[in-house]
Length: 95
Image (cartoon, rainbow, N blue to C red; front, side):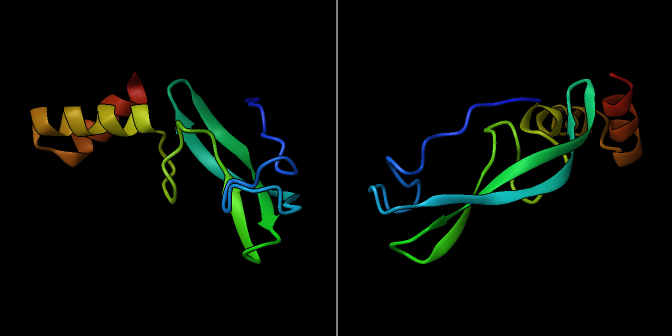
C-alpha cells in the first residue's frame, strides 16, 4: 500500500519550520483495512528543533489500533445494530 511522504527538510510536521528534520526509518504494524489484512510500514522521522520523534501515518489508520477507520466504523455500526461483539466481528470479517 503506497502513499506519498512529505519533504520534511522543507517543513517539519511538528514545529512547522525548516529545522532540518529527517526521516529515521520505519516500523511495521498489522492493519485491517477493507479487503486488506497484513503489515504496513509506518515512516518515522526526527524534529531537530524540538528533539522529538514523529510518525507519519496514512489518515485511514487509527493510532494504536489494528483496524482502519472505515473498518472500525463498520464494526461500531454492526455492534449498535446487533448489540453482540461476536456477531459484529464475524460480520466485519466476512465483508
